[in-house]
Every structure is written in structure tokens, then in C-alpha cells.
Length: 280
Image 1 (cartoon, helix red, strand yellow):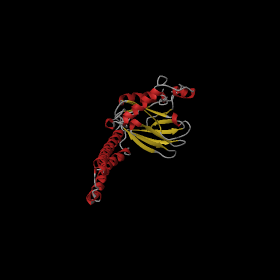
Image 2 (image 1 turned 60 degrees about the horizontal axis):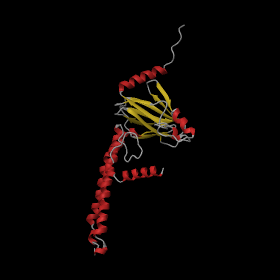
Image 3 (image 1 turned 120 degrees about the vertical axis):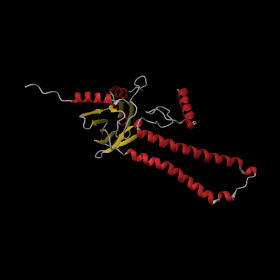
């Protein structure tokens, strides 16, 4: 037990000691992940690019500042006979320089961040709309104008394991507490608009691979959008403390090619269609 914990700490320390290796991780978060994931949407890539720009600027500032501190402490220490340079510490030029440089850096970070933030809320020209409603403790999805709607809640296997009293392992359930009975199926390479609300308390719909989180508030309709570039299954959770079973309210998005999505939609619509009337 101690050896395993020591190994985990060693891995964590090694990860923190190598910031230069902070490249994009997989779409879904993983154990001991160092950096944020790039995700699979236009918005998640925007967020990743803004994050990396700010990260490397901060790394450069840290190297320069701590490097200058190290040189000053060891090369110009009093024990070596160094005398303070009054012109340096009270230089008007230096005061202007280290005021202008941070302003320029802030502008360099703020300009692209503002553009990308505006893009996050531009839901125009969406090809389809999905309504998401949060309930205690499940989600309801409605494909507006398509005649398809269903609820999505924690899968029965996870629910049985959590109430069994045993400590589940990966062997018991690879996606414990992150599986649902009905996945939200979406087409790739399609701009999808979400309208998000709640029926009882505040929830938050969050799938890290999509690159955004949106609150679901009773009486209010919030908007968001996505365009998934890579087929796959992406998992998330409610990100707002919504009650005693808040931790058992997962989200699973299955992204498929448009042709496969149309087949799924037709099959789902046929399954939801009313039974034909009996012949007179």
C-alpha cells in the first residue's frame, strides 16, 4: 500500500518537474494528467490555444524573474563586496520599461482571448438544436424539430455498485459513475446549438472534450454550441452541487458520422412513433 502511494507521489512530482512536456492530453481527463486536454471541438481548441499562450508567457516571465533573482543573490551579494547601484534602483527608464512590457503582454493575451470568447456565444447558423433539461438527478434531451426525446441517467451497473458497499475497481466497471443508460448521440462536423435549462435546482452541463460548461438554471434558458470533429464517446458530469446525488449524474456524448447519425435518428424516431391505429 505504501509502495503504491509512494509511486503515485513520485509520478506526480516528476510530472510537475517537467513543465516543458506540458503538451495536449487526450480528449477526456486521465489520472495524473498534467495539462488540459485539447478536446475535439473548435471551441476546445480555442481554449487550449489561449491556455498555452498564457502558459508559455508565464513560463518565460518566471525564468527571467527567478533567473535575475538568482544572479543578483549570488553574483552581487554583500559578502563579495557588491555595492548597491542607486541609479539602477531609481531609474526612470527601467520604471517605464517594466510597466510597458506587462501591458504589452496583457494585450497580446487579451486580444485573441476576447475574440475566442465572443465566438463561444455565437450560436448563429446552427444546423440542429438540442434542448438539455437538468433534473434531480438525470438529464432530458430533446432534438428540437426531430420528434425525438429521452432521459439519460446513471447506468444500473454503476448504481448497483455504489450501493453495494464494496470499493469498485476498474475490473468491476471501467467507467464507474461515468456511464448512462441513454447516450446523447450527435453528428460530427455539424454546428449544434444547445439550449440548456433545469426543472428543479441549478445544474451544470459539462463535457470537458467539448471545451465548455453551461449552467442549467430553472426558469432561464442558456445557450451554447459545439462542432465535434472526431467520432468517439466523450464523458462528463453535472458540475454544480445539485443535491445528495450530485456525483451520480453523468453525461455521455457519442459522436458519429452524419450518415450514421441520420440512421440512428430515423430508428429512434420510428421507435418513438405511436402505434398504428387498428383497422375499422
